[in-house]
Length: 310
Image (tube, rainbow, N blue to C red):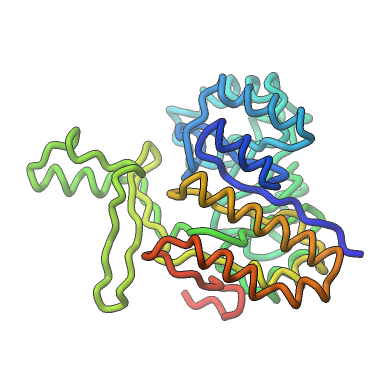
């Protein structure tokens, strides 16, 4: 029998984390915008401590995102934050910048580290390079197809995490592009709030596609017009031993996330325990997701079944 991959998701707040654990999530990624990229919600230090307590009481895990791009002004803060995360007993830190890894070596040498640069984990050799530096997991780029994912898992000396559901980031700039545009237009930025809650989109009339766009402390983010969903295509990755399946919760309601997590929990369990039953139930899982999908967010299979074209 294949092992069950971890089911990982991103809650918007403490209540959401509790609800998603109950729905079947094994772990959550949380954090502060100051240190983490594109989080579903803001978690203060007190929230992080409370989330860890909640998770560990239920036998679940908490990972904290520190995968922002750090400039000199923030490097001095990293040791204090990592020391706090060690004290709070978080299960791992998600990082992209070597500054986090170097600081963790000094401040919390036993802390588990997950390497996530969003885009550059595209081969097993690089994953193993960061493994030798101290990372225990590589978060694979969203632009890889199934064959590449399976090959990386076969050759990797570290755990492998793959996103199976939700939107992906297509573009990030450290510049405040919306804010600068609004300034150029002579508009009041306090009124024009550019955060996630504003529901801003770029509209491509030709393709009838809407790209969510928002600004935060880390710059400007443009997200994919569709949501990945491969609830009916989990077999190959489960058989290959992929360690973690991630459901991305950014710009999604807790109610939506609850139902999606519950559906993937059932699909993963069935795929591992009764493959024939999973094959027979696939269409029902897809229908379940489609029934709750927002009207302007089509589902697709991302790059899983096509060659990456840059």
